[in-house]
Length: 66
Image (cartoon, rainbow, N blue to C red):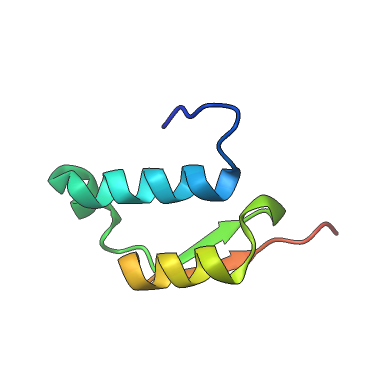
């Protein structure tokens, strides 16, 4: 869990968390097998998608209301 100020968007908070995980070796090791991450609408958008692909080579899939 990463706690951010209320003024930090979901996308910016996600980027902060992913950068932190990348820097901490034991957390990075736990995430090596991840290929697909399902996200809700707050995390959609090309900017976060490209960031995650570049940093982790993960695919983000946006969940839609059914």
